[in-house]
Amino acid sequence: MIETVATSPYDDQKPGTSGLRKKVPHFQQPNYVQNFVQALFDVVERPESAVLVIGGDGRFFNREVVAIAIRMAAANGYARVIVGQDGILSTPAASNLIRKRKASGGIVLSASHNPGGPDGDFGIKYNIANGGPAPEKITEATFARTKEIREYRIVSEEAPDISRIGEHRLGDLVVEVVDPVADYAALMRELFDFAGIRAMIAGGFRMRFDAMHAVTGPYAKAIFEGDLGAPAGTVVNGTPLPDFGGGHPDPNAVYAKDLIDHLMAPDGPDFGAASDGDGDRNLIVGRGIVVSPSDSLAVLAANAHLAPGYSGGIAGIARSMPTSQAADRVAHKRGIGIYETPTGWKFFGNLLDAGRVTICGEESAGTGSNHVREKDGVWAVLLWLNVLAATKKSVKDILEAHWREFGRNYYQRHDYEEVDAKGANALMDSLRDRLASMSGQRFGTLVVSEADDFSYKDPVDGSISTGQGVRIVFSGGSRIVFRLSGTGTKGATLRVYIEAYQADPAKHGQAPAEALKELIETAEAVGEIRRWTGRNEPDVIT
Ligand code: G6P
Ligand code: ZN
Image 1 (cartoon, rainbow, N blue to C red):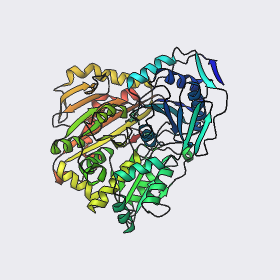
Image 2 (image 1 turned 45 degrees about the vertical axis):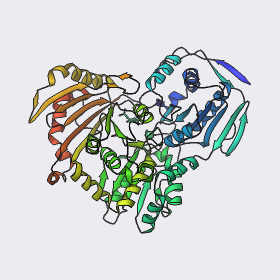
Image 3 (image 1 turned 90 degrees about the vertical axis):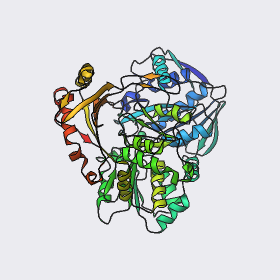
Image 4 (image 1 turned 120 degrees about the horizontal axis):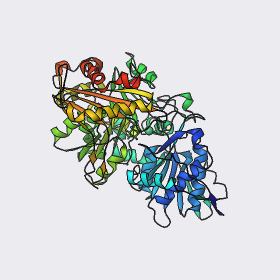
């Protein structure tokens, strides 16, 4: 029976870079979830008898919200929902299902790499029919709707048991519970040379994949240990847990230190990788070398043609603005398009749909392609494996050869987490106030050639996004970018991105901290980070 339940609006349901993210207790407030889901159903485009995909990364509260979303879909005219078994779907697998099953959209439950558990983070994100994150016009309309919502619709019956694969019914709604891995694994088999990778592994190549107790465990076990024949135990922390085992499922140098330590050992595996809470990010480590996400994008773009799914070459590359310009060098040399977008995967959607780009990536450990409309951790690992199998080189050799061919973009990101939001905003305002007069200013040996607040006009639909981060470019092409994170749930996180280009192969062996020393000092001089944040050093350097 369909019930219409009276509710009152919350004023803080504004989706950020990647959907609505709050602490679990915040989501547990009365009708908090229902309001947001109803607002989505009220504003998104969907035909009569629409299909909706629902799934999440399995974090605490996932099951409850899946059940609410199913019951609300039944009361809001959907014909079918496709749900991952036990409510599990990695973000890229959800994107694939939306596309493959011609759904009008999907609800993805995740707070990505943020910790989970009763006091951890939770998130609800809507993806549109192309499989990608909802563009700003939809997230804004949703937010506007949440501020005026007065009622929501839900069926009174319980949701079916989603641990059983197959078709169930809830009133007129068909609830189809699917294996979360099957369709995704089938897509990967189409894109990559599984036989070649299998042969490499059978020949003694050793890898370690750290699923960080998050959603990629089942995907990685099925693909790496199943299809590709890697020995059992290759996938570590492979069981998804509601609190990620108390860990922080963010594959970076801090939280994936254990993986990195294994790869730094002289007798360590040949290849290591990790993914995040919802399976869209990746970390790639070779024996003795960590690959920065920006370099990974450039290397994958330069070598994608070695994989069957990209054998015809790639149409172009897109990167988010703070991502290093290593990919630009590949694009220029190969004569293909390069696009610089604001931070957030949603900005790649139009470029991918229009066929302007094939490969996209971000400094925030995201890489992906036109196979889905999300970044994809396991995909990135498979493309690396395919490149390694095809070239028979080590990760280190591939990276060093890449630098020799294209030059090296030294890069670091400095994060100041949970700083006072007022101070962080004041820092940004102060930079913006000085932008006009910055050009020509000298800091040590560095002279500012250009400074702006990045804005983007989408070349496909003409939409404009402003205030996307302050870029300070120095003569010679070095850059410092200041930006506030759009994904935090507490205070503000200041990100400072520092980049310098080095063409000379004799100088490619430096530590980034050393190569970037002067720029790092300049970031403090220009940004007055200490003054505005009260912090002497970043919490995390990636
Ligand atoms: C999410 C999005 C990414 C984006 C990242 C930026 O992970 O999916 O596309 O790059 O957030 O996060 P930030 O905290 O820097 O806003
Ligand atoms: Zn993620």
